[in-house]
Image (cartoon, rainbow, N blue to C red; front, top):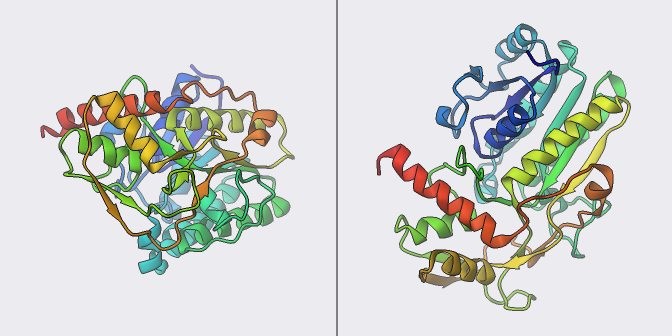
Length: 334
């Protein structure tokens, strides 16, 4: 029987949330998941993890779960994440990411949950003028996705000042890879993440990979991103939880990345190398709002938490993503 308090993980059947569930379980934390399974999958969760199939905006269901399981911390991953879709359908994003987050935070306050960890994003920085990007860089989102996440950061700051709840907002850079034991991975159909798309192409699930823009101010002209292994990111969430419990009066705003960027072409070259194949590449125009480079200054998280990334290697990230993609084919009987 664990002596650690129960953690409620919203979106725990999704990509990042399911890895957080695994990291919590591996560290001895009891977990309950709330997920409406709109983009998540029951198979991504260990069979004995309680799943409340509900929207996080359903306060009656969420609060019942909090009280039934004695929840003392929330890890909040539930939300919509596709940037172009947020531009086309901003109301969806302000509802799913902002209105529902407000409801979830209110539920936490009502139920006396003292700790809250929020899945934020580097998209809150918009088009940064410097790289790498530190936490002190101005937050000027250029799309509803980034703004909807920033609004939740603001809500948490205000609510933490008014109620006995502390929080950590972790601003992710480009999350990639899969659980090293292939217990979970990126499973969403039609995902837009480059490494996911590339390994699908390598396995014949896509005919090619689009390269959106070759005229950026970068060494090879393609966009540069900071790719972080999803299991290293999940480990950071467990450390954040421990830090919030240790210092109940302290809040944290931290970047999650490796502080090293790779261009689109470098990533595709690495996929070719790992798979010993040659993926077909289609050069296309830039997408609106794509910065040339998004690389984290990660000194703050390294100084704040005892975070020692275990998988900070591009070939390793790709290898784990590839292994999961093969397993996913088996799961779905493709």
